[in-house]
Length: 61
Image 1 (cartoon, rainbow, N blue to C red):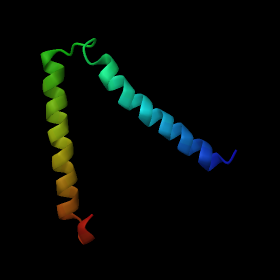
Image 2 (cartoon, helix red, strand yellow; image 1 turned 90 degrees about the vertical axis):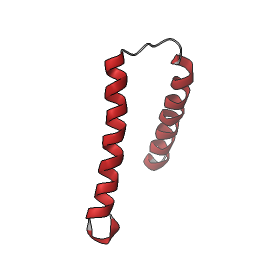
Image 3 (spheres, one colour; image 1 turned 120 degrees about the vertical axis):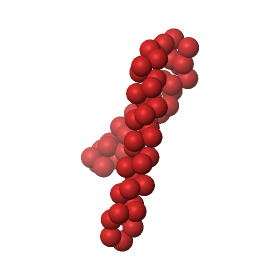
Image 4 (cartoon, rainbow, N blue to C red; image 1 turned 180 degrees about the vertical axis):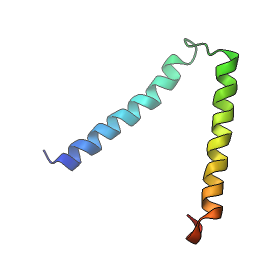
């Protein structure tokens, strides 16, 4: 098997597994309020960093 095909299949399986774990563990895992705040702040920071990178680099990113 070609190494590229093997890598594509491995990434596809990993992506599917991540998508499956979300609904499977939705009600079983309880996050502390502090963790929820950090995740919310982290998402905002990542979006702002993406916007800043696109706006402040030459050629639009």
